Image (cartoon, rainbow, N blue to C red; front, side, top):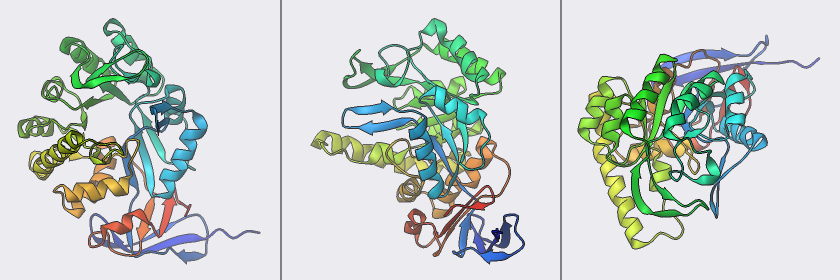
Amino acid sequence: MTTVPTWVFEGTVLPSGDSARVTFGPGDIGEALPGRYGVPGLVDSHCHLTMAYTDDGPAMRGDDFAHQRLRELAESGVSAVRDVGGNRDVTLKLARTEDDSRPFVLAAGRFLAPRGRYFPQMYEPVAPEDLLAAVETEIAEGASWLKLVGDFPEVDADGPVRGSQVGPTYDLDVIEAMIDVAHDRGARVAAHVTSDRVTDLIRLGIDSVEHGTSLTEQDLETLGARGGAWTPTLSAGLTPSPNETPEGAARRKARSEHVASLLPLTDRYGVRVLTGSDVVGSVAGEIDLLVKHGLSVEQALTAASTGAQDFLGLTGSGNLVTYDADPREHPEVLATPAAVVLNHRRIS
């Protein structure tokens, strides 16, 4: 007969800094978990489980890709994922299905954008007159979030983006009606927005700003007053591309400086900062970048764990990721967990 141990963690639980003894598993024989510092599960709040980045740009993937991605996320300490757009047949099924062998999934389903305002290989365009029906369909099939593409450059039918000029997608009255429907049905709205249109979208009632590279202090005040969130996705926005031009580097530096001027203000205004890997990053990398752009390590850890769990309405326990060294003093250890417990079972 195989003996299943009860795993025991004794150490410091972050971000609170409390000392604790926590047990996991059904066994009678206690076995100590490695690591003296633990976080009660990381949250990837801006993830695309079915989206791959290729030399030709983003590409849509299927069920096997999503499950492999979930395994990788679990091994890194992620216990919950908010998928904010992708292959709806895969992501909404994951959101509807209980499976304690993988991270918990919240899903938005499809990208909501009109024709010519997103990567054509990544979505089925939704005309303005069809937007409310599309929202109803996504919610009926398991979406607890809706992913609005609030602005985007014009895109040719065969894929190329026409320059870097970002423009609006839907008219504001259409977006307002969409948000009202979502809220009436108990769902929330995450908006991709990189231009100053973010001000109008916050005023209309979006629940989380994704990217938000043109946010202002006034926007933070308005967003925070409603208990809204901001997922900066710094890995996606600030990682240099292989063929970056001097002009592109200058724009990236300006984005970095702008974000660094705003992140320290989020606590003052009550804005919930979230961590999101997008397609190219990781939660550990996002924590590192949040710290480099003005958050304390404790604030960044909160963004990646208990703060996100609270904002997303995640309940329950049974998750823990441990580290040999204190991440508050050695943030680099976040990339190499000592152990991961997912749904009361040790997986690494």
